[in-house]
Amino acid sequence: MPQKIALTTKGAVDAIPYSGAGQAIHYCSELKGFGVRAGARQKTFVLWRRVNGKARLIKLGRVGEITLQKARRDAQQLIGEIVGGTDPVARKRDGTAGGMTLKQAWVLYQEVMKKLNRSDATLADYQSKIDCHMSDWLDRPLVQITREVCNKRHTKIGEENGTYMANGTMRVLRAVWRRTRRQHPELPEAPTINVDFYPEQGRTAVITDWAAWWNGVQRIVSPVRRDFYIWLAFSGCRAGETMSMAVKNIDLKTGVVRYPITKTKAFEMPLSNFQIGLLERRIEQNVEEFGTDCSWVFPSVTSKCLSEEFLNQMNHL
Image (tube, rainbow, N blue to C red; front, side, top):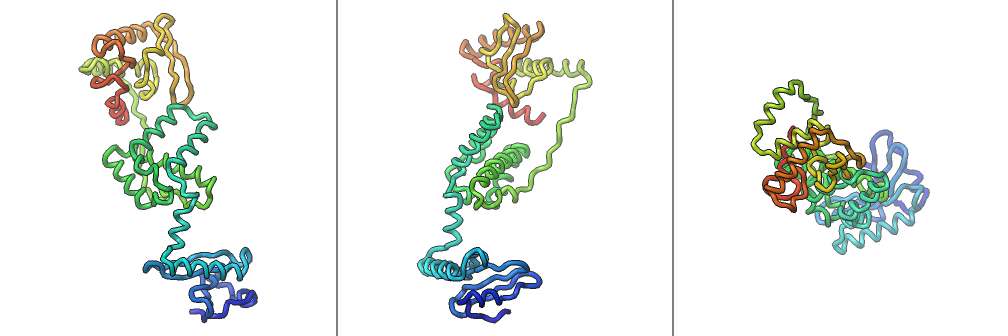
């Protein structure tokens, strides 16, 4: 173990040898806990102290970037804080990024999404994951969302809502965190580094026997659900976009349906006679079943809003 030396002059600091391998700390004989950590290529002023029973090695700055006098002053100030009961490491941690909360970071990321022309559907998807699985974190400073709590939340979501939802939620947090870190580089690495993402497989199954598929669809009891699957097959539209199909965006006279919210960009699609007939029947039956104020083409059988039942089913297809 290196002998203590009087770190009171620049010459004394310069005389400390670089370590051949690893790191060695040379403590000052005059100021308890103050020292210089020497590595293979650089030296760093440090302060070692116990705070509330925990050992803390606080970096004060690299030799050459700050002076010995400043390092000693900073060390003395920190010693005074510690004696007064303050944990400097915790204070710095809590002040990282100005104490920015997840809610504030999400606002920042939404501005980024707008600049990148991300679709409203993508924004809504991110918002949904935050509201459903991270709402209790919104007012929490980012630095308090630790690697441990992040790992536990990922596991909990996976057990209760499925592995794809768990992975997707953590990807949202990672994206928001990384963008915030670009603005506040003092933030630590995203806590999702401690998440073991569930394996995912691409959906490669295709319908090869259309006659059998058609017969199977006809056995679906709910006419809304039956028409929903038929529409997907004859339109090629995404399930999520179809769930939000609104009657107001359909023009049966001209044979056009408009999709204002998609994962890419809004578009209009011409309709075949078969599709027009399906939509006419669906809208007419919806009025009989749900009333004239039903605004969705494929409503839930239990509510007049977008069907979560369909969403949950399609996530498993």
